[in-house]
Length: 96
Image 1 (spheres, one colour):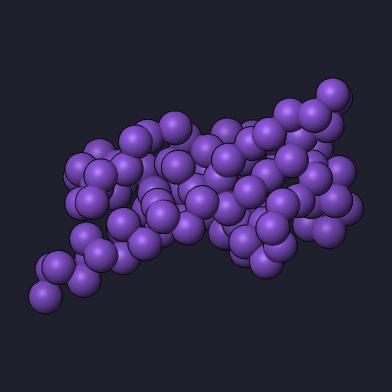
Image 2 (image 1 turned 45 degrees about the horizontal axis):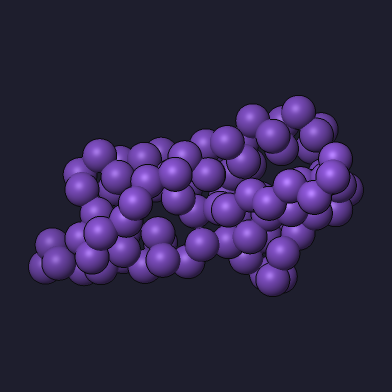
């Protein structure tokens, strides 16, 4: 997970934009952001995609710093990290 600075590096901005560019990932992120924390099983049920597909897309969201993953036993729980999106928004706003 990248360490986000006040102004994300160009590489960090690109990773966040790539993560948000996929409709499935954006849908998953919206669902996670709507609650404090979401269990993987709930995300699979709500999004109607397979657990392996969720896992694949969560990895990209996590790499971009948009999602935090917590493991409890055999279950995974996801939390939205808004600071990554805020840092990207600030960088985009600075363009003029």
